[in-house]
Structures are given as C-alpha cells and as structure tokens.
Image (cartoon, rainbow, N blue to C red; front, side, top):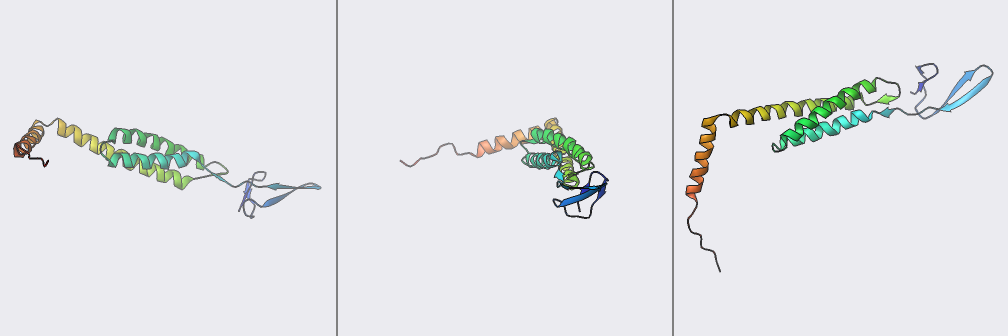
Length: 146
C-alpha cells in the first residue's frame, strides 16, 4: 500500500507504482516514493551496539557510557521521527534505545563496582598481599639456554 499525500490516505496500490489522481477533467499520474528509514533510528542501533560492546570490554566503560547516552537520545529522536509521514524505523529506534539503556545500566553498575572496590581499604590490602605472594613465588634465578 502507498500513501496519497493529497488525500492523506492509503491508496491500496503498492509503493513505487504510479498513482492516478483525478482533479476535474484532467487526470494526473505521479510516482509515489517509498518510505525512508529514520537516520536517527539507524544511528541509535549503531551507538547502542557500540556502547554495549564497549561496556562489555570493561576497559572502555567510560566510552560505553558516553555512547549509550548518545544512543538513548538518538533512539528517542528516532521514535519521534517514525511518527512522521513517509518515515519508518520505529522498531529500529526502539531496538537502539533498548541496547543503549542496557549498556548504560551495565556501565553504571561496573563503574559503581570499581568505585566501591577502590574505596575499600581491606580490598586493596588483599590485592596488594596477593601481588606480594605472587612476587615471592617467582624463581630467583632463571637459566636461559644458550
């Protein structure tokens, strides 16, 4: 089905097929244009997936948090754009929004966990003791073959 912008109704013809309009004695034929996917929706998915992968690497959590915030904004914009005529991508925008929210929640949880761990004196003492034990277990002399 295609959309008739003059009558603001669906015409019943497949998109891209000529549509005939009658206005008085003249008959006009015009090609209908297919709907376009919202660019904001597509970028929301890209930023959401990038944010999720960044957060899961643990090292790039700050980058993942920034990407997820951008993805959330683009997801909301994509959903609003999908309500316009001749624009699709509502599902794509929702998918990007969900990925971005998951990345933001995981990144926030990891950031809070690291902050809590670094502020706990006993945890740092345990890590320091474990490193010292590993250092003590290293051999003092190593014979290398010539």
